Length: 193
Image 1: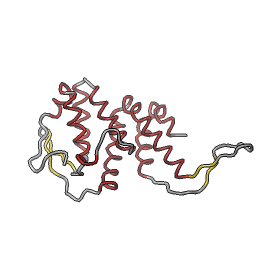
Image 2: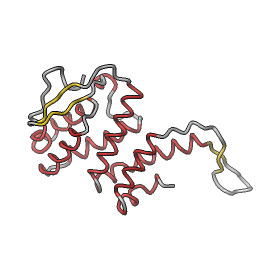
Image 3: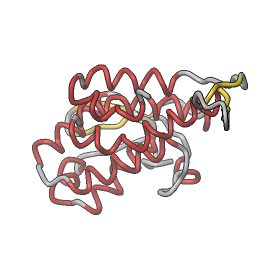
Image 4: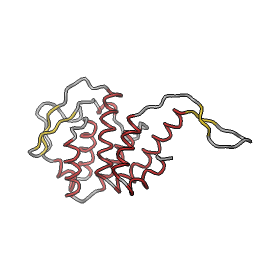
């Protein structure tokens, strides 16, 4: 029930919504214990806990664009935590983080070989949410706000998939995001490996 109302909850308390996203994606319910889908005695319907949990995750991903539009800082923060865990568990990078400079600030990226597995249109919920972030940044023309989002992302030292999506969005939105990313450089490897 909470997942379907996350945008409304974010309006009341965006920090709680951020924490709800992080907690939901960090937890995994694999139980096949039966759950009831109503009180009908004529046509009783049942589900199981894993199915209910997966529906909640799906709803959170579906409502992420609305939360992102209303509360970008908290939504970006939640996504960065979710994507980092996703990359570390699903794509298990073996390499060490690569030092990256953005303006005069040092940050890093975690090589994840996302140039192989990252596709827009994926059904993996963290990637669906990353699609929403990319689209949000491509639509945003407020250079000052975009600069702040890039700083927020860089501060977290995200996996390469996030940098890859930033660069793709920057190519489509050169006036705000492209300018914010123009000093991005890595002397060790190509970004997006």
